[in-house]
Length: 414
Image (spheres, rainbow, N blue to C red):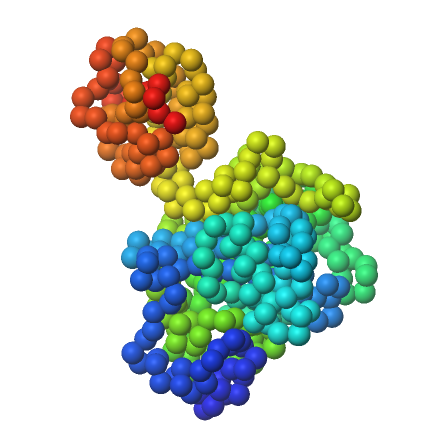
């Protein structure tokens, strides 16, 4: 019954598939690898839309890039603000990124085409290859959470939204979330995930993106705790829910394999981040042609800086956990190299302290490791083109309680 039920709904759920549902089922016992898995990383674009009955039903309300490293049991979730100004290609030009999925769907009412344009747009921004997408609408989100009997979420800060929209161009009564743990049903979880009009820090799109990531992690935890894939009744009910509200180009066998990969990921191994002003990479701006509010790379920041944010997400997270203290000196005496290197290291989460260096000017950057900080050491080697040395710089008194690494910048380094 389960296979028959899933087969009947597969055309709605699994889009862009060349193989039939039953041929996919034939691969289930042997499993299947996902695209990118052999290279060590699987990238998936996760989208939330309003769905039918909402204004702009296919505008993306949430945009999250999931980067999964199966061998390391690690995943990062990176939110992109929906107002980010993006290149949608020659047909559409510069548009807010939340319109990519909608424009793709408008081509011929095809979810695969919608996902393709959204993926291509995010690929340009992130520099990542993103072969997969999954999209769910508000109604499906609500029903899926109710199906698993709610989720457990920790509210970081108390906030009240007085202008959360209803479905009749008005507002629901003021709704408050209090700091601390809360069990949420689907309706409450949707309000928590979408709210953006509260006073204070929770009333921003960036705070909302962090809440949406909490939803993903909480739902994943509940599905694993319930061992949902072994409950045919729940699976049938879930198929009923997602048949009209969830669409993906991830095949059935790939999806089950993805579940097996991620089910044992601990909370500590799933890291959330957001491309928001706190990164120093993006700023508020206006679109030249329309004057509309948009988010842009800050002055002096480039496409490469934005791409590095995505591509260094795992390393940056590791650096933050290592909490390294770096003594940094510029042997060229000009200070120009120091400022650039200090900014690079600080942006990755390291504490940088200026070191007085009186030795002979060096021709290349070098790094000396005092305490074992492997991820920080790798970051310095990769991003500062530094060579590791086995002896501390001449004249520098090493103190393992005050510093973890010493970096000396050379005048001949880029």
